[in-house]
Length: 368
Image (tube, rainbow, N blue to C red; front, side, top):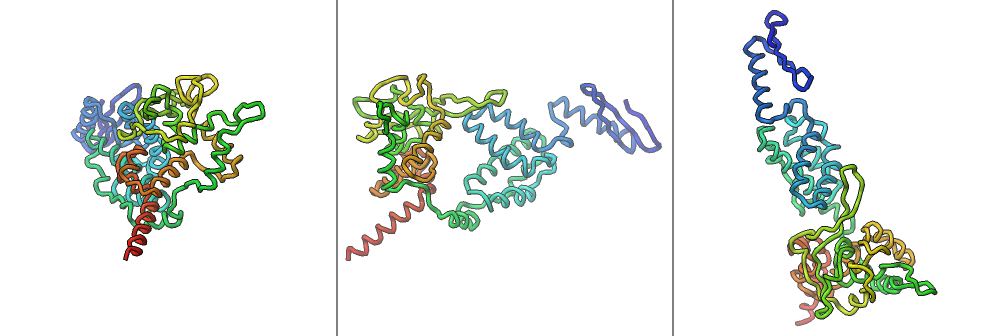
């Protein structure tokens, strides 16, 4: 319906799904044009973006990404979007998001309080979601094209790293000795105090991640060659109702994460002597251990060993630090850890690598 409701003021109405949409103009032609433009958008499957918030658009984009990503990668993306982007600029209309807003309110602000990797994840999510909006015809250009992402060496991140001490968390030699004593501890009856506690000894001597450790099966172990194949990970997922559950992801974190590790004598001693399940380390029922349960067990073991709280990543970092102390090349360390690239290893352990280089220079000084 199109009508002149006041002299020089025209109204065009359209009913969609029981709701009316109104278009106003100073002439019948102008009101009709607006109505037809809207009908064209509807016919092409476009949304009326004048009334859609960026947070709502992000939900649409996330549904698309869920079909493309592995569950673990998808949930990391949701965490980034829900935790950092929506609360900051999600309430803006999609077509009002510009480069200045993203630069100041998100990138610059987050760079003052978060690490480079965290801010880079935020930047990438913004860039990809708005690039999708542009390709879909929802916006005319991607504002992130004009946003500057600070480099990892920028003063903002460098100062924060300095404030944090610039050190990764590793176990000292004394702490390792105490932990090795606690891991196999048993009651007088012979029952282990910490079932699966030896799993952390395996992690300490292989550098594998907690998700990889709870996923290793006896099929992955080659008794003849004394090797362990790392090719899967236990991850936490959510069902449609938002309830958490764990599942086995056959492909690991990155392409280079799939690897075959030669086990040393300490790693071999950490393996159970009896097979109670297809999994090397498992629950009483033979199911994979929930990573959260493993972290809870580690907390209890650290208390008994009188070691301050550590994350499960401490074994991976300690393993890497010992390799660097033995002058193992960074490329070899990267392969053993299953990092995506040598650059990842270098950036993670830059402090340890610098210390190694400093010792090398001291050795050179003593040569002459």
